[in-house]
Length: 133
Image 1: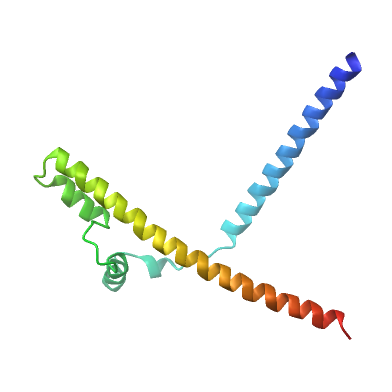
Image 2: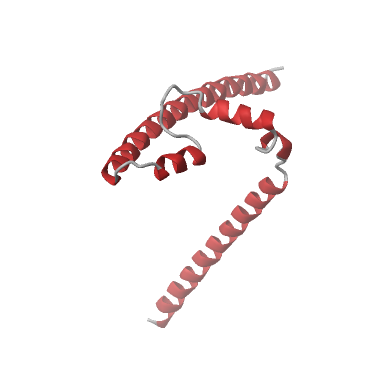
């Protein structure tokens, strides 16, 4: 009976140690990616008028009339619109935002899938070329 208990405690301990090792590797990987990623801060600086115009242009590239920036949301919230009308607007805008996001996401997934297919095909050809004399 005691050996079964000790075996169970040992199994639980080894499982917890394995989780800690996996967590450690995950933290190291995330740290490595963050430390090795560079961002051109001037490219995204909104105080630069040229960048502000470009960012606003990208944010408003869809034809929808929903607010897309924090300022536009605040302007709409501070208006004299009754609360039930604001809820209706928020619901409409949220549905439209999810629709836009879904379209963008599906296009990104398609492009990634096509690139992955091409890369896999090319890698397979490279492996075959190396194996065959």
